[in-house]
Image: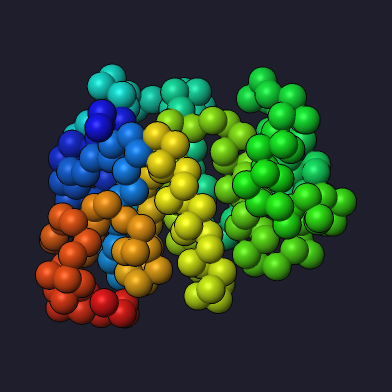
Length: 235
């Protein structure tokens, strides 16, 4: 597998306070990497650095072998990075169809975007005329994923996909994430609750106070260590 996203010894800060202390992480094409850790560990900051939204104090961001440290979010998006932030990236006052229509800036036609979205998430076709803000939480997350996939990303960054959703809905969403990875996309998923994502992850890293304390395959050993590494997540 070719490595698409690499963070090398990345340090980043919020208001003068260091949030990431030398984070090194990589994601290959077709791979799902789970970034786990308690609240305040620096997980979202790591994603924002990877998307170019948060500046790097030191270290490198490499995409497809190219050093893109300091590149703008727009340039990284053009290079194939798609961030779906916490809280679902949809426009609540627009219909499902209009949310998808906004993605035609990618160069794809409305018909093509809708075909891709509705094939992957058939429920969205049934809700096409419905205002996005009136969808269930799971349906809004499906719409956010559909919007992101309209950009044909090489790297997909997901922040707390499970937030506020029932476990059954979360399991279905992560089945879709696994399918997206199987199509060659590199997927980096931030989760506080390990059980939500470890079933589909190829690799997991545990971030505690801005440092990766453990990483490797999500085997029984890692699951056993999770509760010792941080509180607030079921191993």
